Length: 343
View 1 (cartoon, one colour):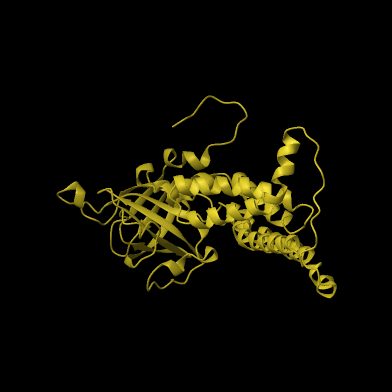
View 2: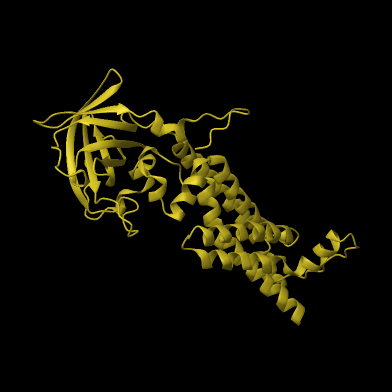
């Protein structure tokens, strides 16, 4: 082997590393699982309470099409670098795509800044042998063919390894197709339960406090529409037991004092169990419900005449009224032409 052959062998290793590192991110976006979709409990988090990363995740998750296309671009780039004849195009698409990802990670304080930079560099290295030709093409000059020898020069070994790109492509397409078929319908389904939604709260069995900052009465509550165990969410909570029931989803509670608590709710017939974690703070720990659970309450619920009543045992019922204004972000329909609605 000469220096040129060794160089192309190293180039093959870079291509395979680029493929392996990017595919998990591409697959997660394709099935709408990396950023998810905004749900009712997230509507109770104000813009000022959002972290930069949370704002980016909400932005990307708001449009399933944008998230899917971002994953598709990464998927196409990763697949193209598997083959010698298309590696340059995969390197170009992957570098541009991951440069944007790295920029977003830097400006929205996403922790994986260095991995994104490494991946962008890998795709730039994949593209590197073709950069002079690409520049001459853009400049309108003649472009000669690139003589890229096989990375595996041993004929016996090559007989086996030559099928690796095609096999990797088939496996990737099969895994992506299975993941899309099984996860995208769940991610797009917002029917949830009869409780799913955002509500203003009146009544209840909690006494008003002399100081508003200490008032623990309920002001607003949001019940999620996505089954928590299906999304693998309950493992975040420390020492929490999941009650028996037909549905387990996220819940968020805003108290009169202004404090915000997140947690889970479980439906079991006309019974609902609400588990709340500690109030949200700026320490970055309980930005999502992780625990421990600090309060568990059980209610009998009843829907009647546009409201929902949560009746505790031996106490005054909480009356929940749907908040139309609070769900504008999720309910705003798509229109080709409309008056500006920028809020």
